[in-house]
Image (cartoon, one colour):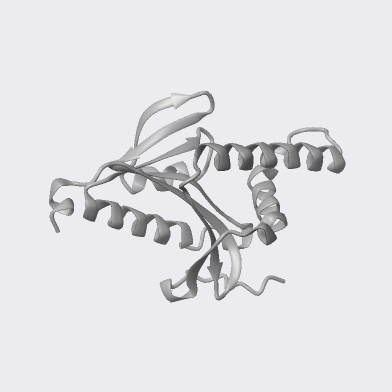
Length: 172
């Protein structure tokens, strides 16, 4: 039984800390949980799934660390317990959400929306846009659209979404 509360989260329950090498297995398990539904459609053994996921996770990690050297790699905590990751890359005029993911027990409780709204509020104060690549079949696509993100391009199985502040928000 999870020790996480199943109710909607409050902001004071959420904090961050920088990602460290000690987080590797947690981050792998988190990544694997985001691919579970996809891999359940295969006839692969658990060992085959694990080998594939570890290879994909390592490739993603290497790509991020190679191409986003100045990015902010954070572990999301709820009541001090790791529940997700948030990777942000601040560019001139744009905040790229490289990744936001939560463990299954923390999903659909308002954590992601709360954090996204904070990112949008901060970007609006600077007049920055916010962008993210989202898989075409990702259920979170509805959340992004509800928050005002618009599809501006498609790359393979990913939509590139962008949110732009209103001119009045940037002047507040």
